[in-house]
Length: 81
Image (cartoon, rainbow, N blue to C red):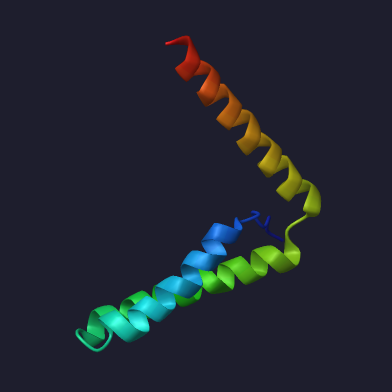
């Protein structure tokens, strides 16, 4: 029905840390902003869980290979300057 994009572990970690920062640091000061950010990070967490459970392994490996290639190309451009 729809294609699931493989998300990085950094995205997953950001959703967890962001939720707890919102809960303990922002929510006591501002209920509206705290609730909004907690809801946002909950949605990020749900997206990460869906990605982990349904993304194809080949897609994840292809994305990692593309990221490595992009890093190598950036380093090559910097060394030419």
